[in-house]
Length: 120
Image 1: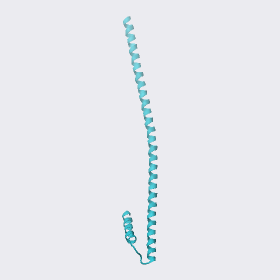
Image 2: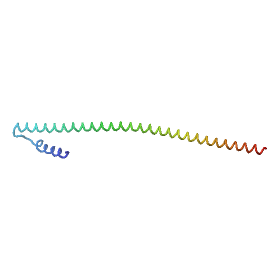
Image 3: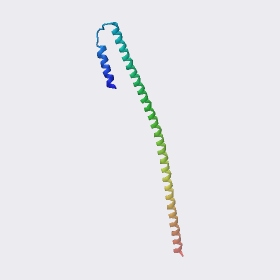
Image 4: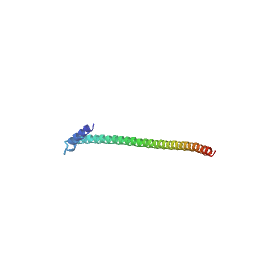
């Protein structure tokens, strides 16, 4: 499509803009009308391109907004996961401390019983 437009532009330029004189005023008016139509077509193409660019900018903005939302959700999930891991590690540490206390308590009882047996 772009090569067709360039060919049409070149054809228009060769046909109409290089001429120095016109044989009749009708021919000059025809050329002006053709030139005006050509400019209108170019203007329409510019407007279509602007609309396309506006659409692409809107799509980009929507995607950026979507990415921001996804990033926030991911951060929340990571925060929750870290909190859960922290709670899990805390629970594991508490369980470990309890197990060690129980083991020390058992050792203490054994030691006390050994001492009392030795005293008898």
